[in-house]
Each structure stands twice: as C-alpha cells, then as structure tokens.
Image (cartoon, rainbow, N blue to C red; front, side, top):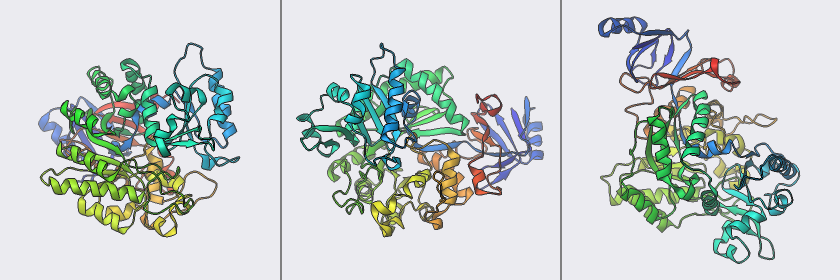
Length: 549
C-alpha cells in the first residue's frame, strides 16, 4: 500500500468533497479522508510500503477527454504542420521544406494539416491544386483544414484516386469544381474520410509505435482517459487491427492511458457486421474498450458545412451539408440502439442536431427498455427548444469549450445575432441537468486541458491581440469545469462506478498540479498551470522532473 499525505485533494465526490490523505492498494483507492484516518486505516490493514508527501499541492482525478482523435494526433506528429499559417504562400513554403527533406524511397502520400483560411492575410480562400502542384510535382499530396472537414489534393493525388471531370459528378457538393467542370482539388466531408482511409500507411507495428509516442503527451497534460474516434484512420477501416494493437500494448504493459473507442461507421451493412462479430459497448478492458458508435451528421461552422435550418447569414447560397438523410440516420441509430450501444453523433448546426435528436427519440420510443446513453458531439448551434429536447430525451452533449476561442469571431457572421445568443450554451445545459463531458476534438484543437478549462470559466479567447468575452452568462465555475472533465467523462463512457472521482474502491487515476485552480489570483494563471505528476492505476506514469524539455 502507498500513503499519499498532506494534500489538497479535491475528490469530485459530493459525499466527501475534500481530503488530505489517501491510501492506494494495487490499482485502487482503499482509503480517502483525513491524515489521522489514513494512519488508523494502515494500523488496521498493514503498513504502507511508501509514504508520499503531496506538500499541499492540488490533487484531482485524472482528466478525461470525452472526444478526440487519438490515432490522428499520433499520425499528425509525422505530418507537415500547417497550424498558424497566415497565408497560402506560407503553406507553400512549409510544404516545400517537407519536400526537400523527403527521401526518394518514401512512396507514401505527403500529408499536411492545420490551416485555416480565416487567418490568411493575403486571400481568405481555400487553397487549391494550383497552389500545390508546382512544389509537389508527382508526389500525391493532401493538406487538411484545421477542422478536418475540408481537404485539398494536388493533381498527382487526384490522378492516384481517379478524381477527374467525369468522376467528380458522382460526389456532388463534396467536390469543388472550376468553371469548366474540372475539380479544383478541394474535397469535403465523407469523401475526405474515404481518402484518409485509402492512403493510410498504418500497420500493426507502426500503429503501436505512434500510440506509445503520443500517449506520453496526453499523460503530461493530465489526461488519464480519452474517448476517441480512430477507425477512420486505419487502412480499410480495419478496427480488428486497431484493437489488436491496443491488446498487444496492454499485455506488454505499454498502454498507459485509458482508451474508449467511438467507432465511426457510414452505412448499415458495415455497422451490422461490426455487431455480428460480437463487438458492442463495453467490449474490451478497463484500459481499452468500445464506448459508442460515432456517426457524422454534418460538417463544421468554419467551413460552412455545418447543417443549418436556415441559410448561412454570410452566404445565403448554402445551409451546409447533411451527411445522412433523416431515414438513413434513423436507421443507423436504430441499429446501434437495438444492439445496446450508444451513438455519439457529430452535429454542429441546429438542423443536424435536430435530425440527431429526432433519430434518437424514434429509437427510444421503439425500444424503451434499452436505457442507453446516446450523445451528440459538439452541439454548437442551439436554441431553447433544442436544449429542452436534450433534457427530455436525456441525451449527452459532448462539448469542446476551446471552440469559442475561434468561433466567437465568426458565429454571428455565420448564423446571425439572435441564434448566436443561444449557442455554445454550456451553463444553461448544466443547469438543465444535461450531461456535458468536456473534450477538445484534438487535433482540431490542442488536447491541452488548461486551455479548455480557461475558455469554459472565462468565456474569453486565448489567441488574438484583443481579449473578447462571448456570452459571459454561460460561464462555468471551476468546480463545474473540472466536474465536466472528470465525473462527466466517466459517465459518458458508462464507467462512473470505476473512475472519475477519488473515491474508495475506484481506480487510482489522479494528477498533481503546481497551482490550486480553485484559488488563483488571476484567470490567466489557469493557462500557466502545469501537471507535476500523473498516476494511472496508482502507478506514476508522468513526472515533470524527468520530462524532456
């Protein structure tokens, strides 16, 4: 047993909110409470083999990112970084540098990601194939917008996948065309998803390698659990291969972070085959498991592909993209519901959210015995009626507070003033009793929890020269924000009985911070708060003293 003493332990457990000591045996908390009580426990149950002085530091449960793309993050560490580019020319410069460092033996596609045309200072437009062809030549290349709902191909890439004037017709709005009918290289939504699968170079060994490399970054940020959409990044959507990688890593003692898979599917046959193989929610272990079925209902607000009820305020020619018809969405949700598996539906626009709620309600009414924790991911553009339906149907809202850092600059332009006043309404959601597990959608945004917490409790932007505040009445307090990052995250994966709080009998996942988030002099101190140590199963998996700077 290990005794942790002299701590400022915020348990997030309402039955014992604060403690100063805790005892861990094997991988669980066996005592949480006062220091005297801890010593009394040890006298009765055996001596501690180690005593660790927390020196008054804040201790909280391990953080849980409720929606990200872990394999994408791991892969992106080897892609061309286009985050922060302020012009198309700068994109070209970074791509050119990558080409110069590329070996002749490398036959993989060149991939870049992270650009956002709204930040361009030359032309605020999507790049196209003409911007890439001169510097990439015959090397198939794809560069993805920061939202990962828009991609740009060079001519070599389009040739490789057979995208041309004739074949572009079958993809409709998913391909942008030049006046002569030729594709200009810009592709969207489900077509982009298919191409990512097609060009994946992952196999069992390199999948394990990138998981081990990337998990260290998560642990250093205090993330002990992530719920993640990964199947779409595997070759041919090979989920068996992905699960084999996790299984082998766990058996080898190399999988340190807990992974909950939100399994992405596009059509009924593939989903039904998945369930026939025996997969469903809860399959796996407490280190890696299936938590839900991920469905993509629309696009992104920044790319104007989020599905709205009314035309975009700054582009009346479009209402965004609906990835499914209502009938098809209903079918997918019903299949998952009848297999006792939650859905986590990507829906940003009010129309997409409405469609998702309709599909969930139909499934609940047809089979009310299945009390399943369905959820909607992002839930950005909402009104009072939509929020009431979340409450009535008991649908989770997987939210990403960090999104307002950028979106506060565009939301009024995109959807109009009135609708912008009822969107990103996290405090209203929580007050209504809606579950709102926090996530980041990494690598769309950084996985950094402190940036996420900062935007949740201040409603302020982080980036930009001028500090702005968006809907200050929707601020959460610090307790609510951390609750959403711990308890709500565990609830979202149906694991609140084994993790999410520092409670006797639960898994010993916790972090030690260098600042007391509950007693800061300045809001900006949140952003400077660092993780000192991270524990999973009571074992030290990250120590800032030994971290590579």
